[in-house]
Image (cartoon, rainbow, N blue to C red; front, side, top):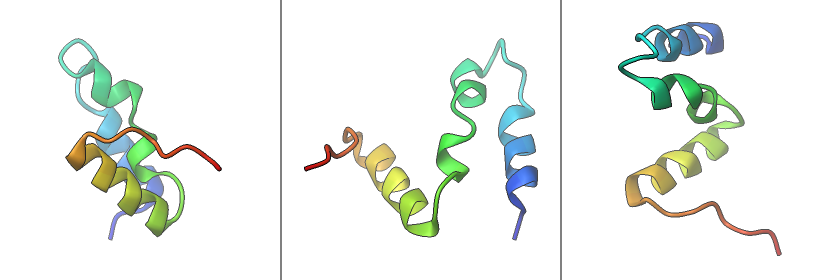
Length: 54
């Protein structure tokens, strides 16, 4: 299993000119708890917006 730092390095390694969105949003998929990352992935796969509080 990769550490948080190793994952961040991998997401920010590609050239910014070719992968601006990957570099810009590198922290989002690897931050939070396991459940947070799972929900992020499901939203990304289904293209759903973040849930609203309430």
